[in-house]
Image (cartoon, rainbow, N blue to C red; front, side, top):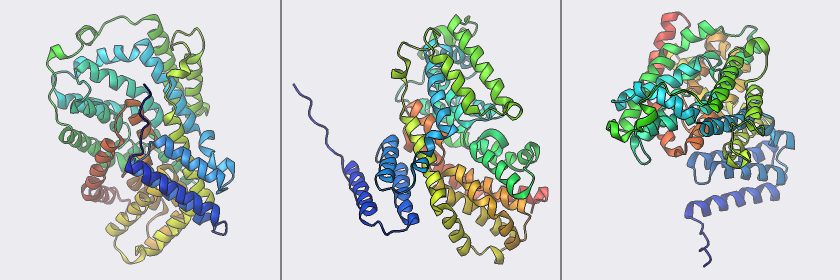
Length: 465
């Protein structure tokens, strides 16, 4: 008996109609400016990623197809994402994550961490959020942290007894992912936007921010306090109770001294080497992506014993295509001048010269937050930092203070698509994007109402404004 053909849902039909309409516009209106053509594709991609009406990877493929067929930009811009270190870090992360699962190392780590998180659901959520934040101090790559965390979080949820369908499972896994994402913008080398800002500030203002000054300025409010609020939000959105001891996996979860197998030891040494190289990247200058790719090559090599036979068949390439699409979108926004045009338009309508310091702080932070929805988070400092001197002259602030308001803005994430590591973590964990979107929107609202005013007062106390 043949299977009944699947039908287009209303959302899929609307999405297809809009894609065809945009494609028709691009092909039939060759006289439109490059910026308008780029804007039509960018807005379409952002809308589809934000609504989730199509799978994220399919939206990325539609973006690539429209740009290439209609000649919106040169191929090296359209496919810039595949040359990006972030994309190859995703690939290496997929391989490392599969090796962690195949060797059982994730189960062993979960067995040793699990006893400290049993007995209290609030303690489990607090523990995984704290674990995610702590990793940001020792691993400079947000993508790398997510890659290592997700298989451990999944196994940990199993060992603690939070099975599929329980809100506690989402609370534990999503809490760990968000814990290594949302508060970590307050730690200088912990995410790509931070590093872009550091390089842009050095290029434009002559001297990059130091690790300690950046941490003192941002971490107390945007890091530590945001972490506490994140735990509270997760417990309210995904309430649960700790399973009875019999519900958890009894063998390895209660035996924290189970000896490591030979493949686990080999993989553990490889991961220790990777972390050591990631920590020392400022000394040797090798990108975290290429370090991860080398580790992935060892895992994938025949006879390593770290992966199943024909390992590429076990890898889910959807996150790879999605991240390449996100990075390419940012490249197109920069190439077409759209990002800079949006920023200048927003500057023109913001009353920066006629407001007090508090309003200026909010407006500049809001400018960065808003721009991040168009060009994604790494594109914000690349566009706004060159304007720091101009904005300083308008506001009367120092250029360094103007530049640092970007952190307040791009750390306020509205939707998951803005941060590729977050989406990669969600896809790898099999979580719904709308779950993360709900948390992001609530945390953004709390940030606007509570954290931004407190951060402004903290800046005043430190004498920055």
